[in-house]
Length: 139
Image (cartoon, rainbow, N blue to C red; front, side):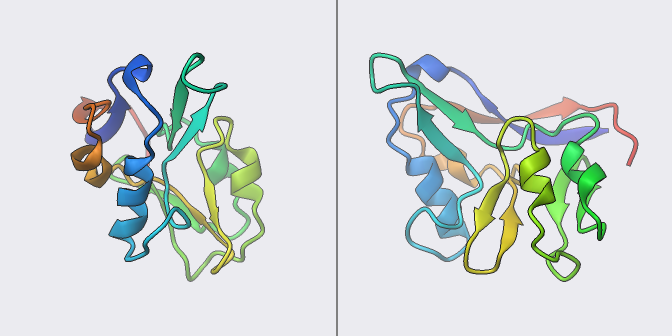
């Protein structure tokens, strides 16, 4: 199955400006970082660099396995939250091995990157890229 996937082209060029995070929240109609599904974290400042965290589309996602209500699903290769089914237990966030599930404190629901690519257009250093890949995933 062909899937559009967000990838980091070059971690070393990231300056930690967080414009990708602002763009992601803005896509949700919010100014600020609170609804961002992508996070830029420092390894210890400019000298040590930054890491960009978002859903990696695991082959066997632990977030799906631990969800007691079936609110976390995979469609066309991407992980989605069905908000009407979610009870806000946080099991998915705790199960994510890369820390890619953010939490919406307002709705008490998870925020997961859907690989839409909106953030790519706002990265001034072209760190992020949306590419089409072939995934071997049973849905």
